Image 1 (cartoon, rainbow, N blue to C red):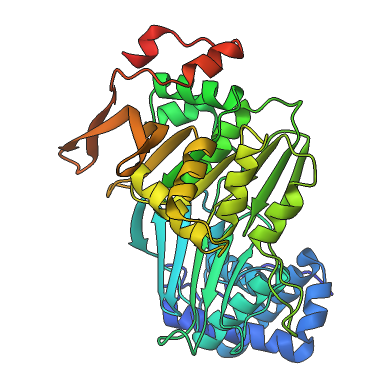
Image 2: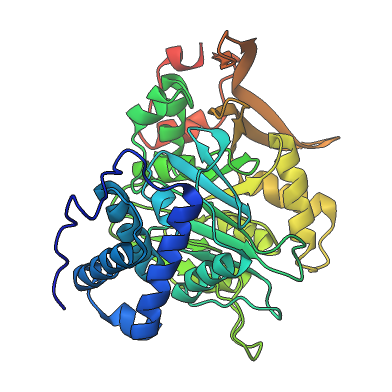
Length: 439
């Protein structure tokens, strides 16, 4: 294949300023793509190197422009080539969004309804798919690359992309408006302590306390709603785990990015097409206990594995951490009770509460505000069992004041003055926090 020659000024017909409208642009891209598929099937296209295929697409574009007398500027020509390459090698229209590091969520409600979250705020994206069939093709490519499948018999799937992004897709018959897709993107690196402080997620005294808790091997739960930054905070706290410890991580979709060298990562597995081979988080938890972990980190406890997590925390695996969906630290323990009951082991609620109170030393609550800011709203010590369940003592809280003229949240972090009982455990390990931390 010969690389395309540059388009001459004559072939542009002096219409650089006119350019293509969106409909004409999409039509041209479809024609070039179809011509390529007619000459080379899709499997051969994927075997050709990207640069070699770029030249072939350039020749096809130039030929089509001359045949149909279509005006096109050089930037528009390059854009068509890149978009067709994205169709062959990547995720089609989504590739542009995936290259933007400021985008944290991509939400596809239909082939022509694509939304993004950028810096905490939702907005409609400028891209769209050709039709439902085009969107379904991209979804199938995503899940196939992750070793999973999606079809009418299995219309809901969760998977992980190569860059660590979490994908959730649903197709008819469970969706009524065509295929739906959501992509939760994670940064390519773990945030440092200084970045957490700069983002306003917490203040330095709170960070000092959490660092001390991790180094002293306290069992922590990071709680919060969806998208509040639980996993991001858990990743950041994992930086304080010493290199000498062996860590086993358990996740439904792998999202944790631990920096230590001695890490074993376990991920659940869906059943195969025959309905066999499913591996649940509870299966992984039971297996992890036999792998001599110093710490166990569960990306998110959401079912019967909560019982095994509590037992691990109560039987020598100090320093374990997990995340839980809940609206408040107290609600966190109500959810744990419900999840342990799902294990159907015949445990009573008082026994479950006692297990939870013994296993967990601190709860960190995350909140996401309307302006997109993600804040540590509360840090609580777990106390004894009281008349209303597990008693909690708040050490730090975030006090919401209001909104500024740009409707950005205004508030401040405040210490309650309470000095947690687990400070004795920190001191026993040589970790001494100044009195100013709690003032």
